[in-house]
Length: 378
Image 1 (tube, rainbow, N blue to C red):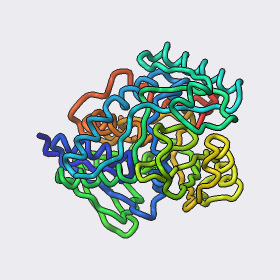
Image 2 (cartoon, helix red, strand yellow):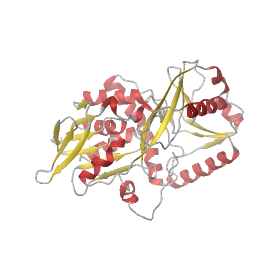
Image 3 (cartoon, rainbow, N blue to C red):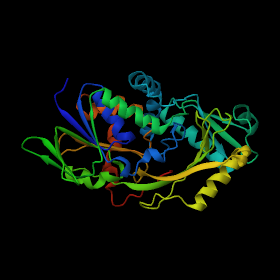
Image 4 (tube, one colour):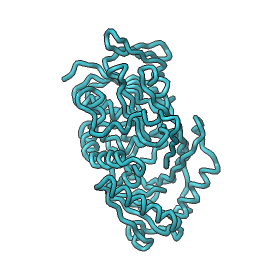
């Protein structure tokens, strides 16, 4: 067991999973969490474990997502046994549904490209008649879809609760209400100094920056480049309904409690996390077109949340060359990748293992080419 202390700045899904992965291996872990004042991405997360369509522009990411989904049952069972908190894992496959022949064809081409390029990500395209065998009540607007056997769903807030409870069970320290404003590396001692806005200070042997939208300014202080943009996701929740949707879809999913989660949007609006009438109406119309029975359902909540996104939509996992022991972790899929963050990234960033093979592709150096242009499909 290492005697080093690892401090993770950021107590959301990404930071908590990495911290848990280190703590379960016997590392002394401290999590500095901004708490309810943070732009908590898990509030706006659709809760999908989604492999299908991930990584069309980066096959290493497709494989990373595939492998993460395979680890999910182990994480779920471990957290449930350790904490008694049920993440709500259901991993029996998921459906993407399309409203036009053009987008269904594009979907088929994308999935074929990913399965051939990454391997082990099979899919099945379905006509409406076959889709209705799995999704009764599907509306006539749906002209086709795809099924991914790796896909599934969880409750993102219960996942966060389970990770925090697991961290405490593993002896980690979680300090909430902390707004970290400065991090420094002491070259002579190799220690990191971490300062909060209210004057609190901590020292640590190793440092992981996983604070989502708060990462860029802190990363540059330890020699790391971590560009992040925001995307707002708006989500709707219905009243509890009799179970009718037994598989998650890209447009709606039914929770174990019976409510239907409808979403989500992806909007470039800076740091505005409000809901808007036009997007709420768009989501509601799309949901009713997919499942007409939802027309009679009463909406009980709507919210918006900001999620971090890199310029190309793919993660950044990187260690600092100038400040040994400092790492940055940014990703858009905190639910899908949670098990890989716990079982693979946590031990690596804690200094217990080597980075996974071919992980150089996730370095932020890819954004430094002044002549490069980037786009993402979120």
